[in-house]
Amino acid sequence: MSDVLQLTCDLISRVSVTPEDAGCQKLIADRLRGAGFKIESLRFGEVDNLWATHGSGGPVLVLLGHTDVVPSGPREAWFTNPFVPEVRDGVLYGRGAADMKGSVAGFVVALERFVAAHPDHKGTVALLLTSDEEGDAVDGVRRVADTFRERGQRIDWCITGEPSSKAKLGDLLRIGRRGTLSATLTVRGVQGHVAYPEKARNPIHQAMPALSELAAKCWDDGYETFPPTSLQISNIHAGTGANNVIPGELQVLFNLRYNPHWSAQKLEAECESVLRAHELEVSIHWHRGGEPFFTPEGPLRSAAREVLAKFAGEAPEESTGGGTSDARFIAPLGAQCIEVGPVNASIHKVDEHVSVADLEALPYLYLALIERLLD
Image 1 (cartoon, rainbow, N blue to C red):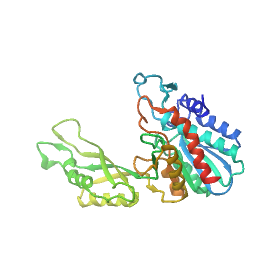
Image 2 (cartoon, rainbow, N blue to C red):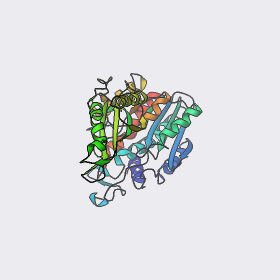
Image 3 (tube, rainbow, N blue to C red):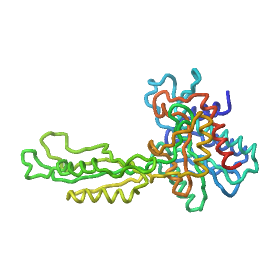
Image 4 (cartoon, helix red, strand yellow):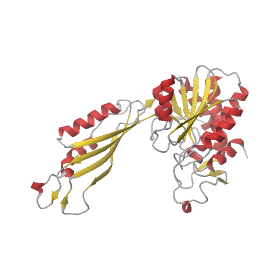
């Protein structure tokens, strides 16, 4: 069994459902300490974060990942126990195989090989891991980034190991992500009997025109490779359950995924302006999940394009699609960020898996990127 396959299996066997780390980071810290890395554990609340560095000065290249996984769902739905890794027909099965314990193992093996071959490399190479990527993402990389900001920690380049590939390893290079902004909107009315609407004020009826306007609004036409900004209403709740009662309150959940044309602050102001124009009695709670980021042409993007082309056999698609990742907390520190990882077809699903061949190629891919940037 190869080194990266063995390490991935060891990580999968640890039930590290968010925010638990279940010993994954200790295992990795012990290995990297033995390879000459400086190790720092940053625990905030219930979340474990690991910061491992080798070298000094700049440029600073950070490999970013997470050891936590989403719940497995019903175990009986899996072919085998999701936390007992199993290889069948050249495929490794287990929760986290693709998202993202395989990438984390690939990082570790690549780092060991790099410092063994280049003990006096220029700059700093680092690994940053959290156990809070799949959860609330409050005490994970977001909190670590605040700590780095206070320290003045420099980061030039960041490679996140999120499973970015579509059909084969290296066919897609993530060069940015949209921002995410969530809202809990409460519209207040006056409860009453449906037979006497003049004695009540129906918040559903009052809110519908404003919600329709927000949902139909053309926010922009996109930005670079980013799609247009989108607002999606995800949940509406009102009423007592009875069909003869006008509710006194309506609650609406919605989310905006937005490109660099916008900031969270500007979007909040725009939405609130629409609500005020409809003269609604409202309160709104905003949650800023992270601002968009975009990596322009430069050493990081160029190196990644050339390395991935060798692995995929052709130049990768360069994309800003998908959801969010922890890179959204590193980019505001001034870092250029990309995401490179295995095929994402099975992530968060029953029988999550990764090709053993792809898994064993990951250390070579990450090593090639590190050497292009720091050797």
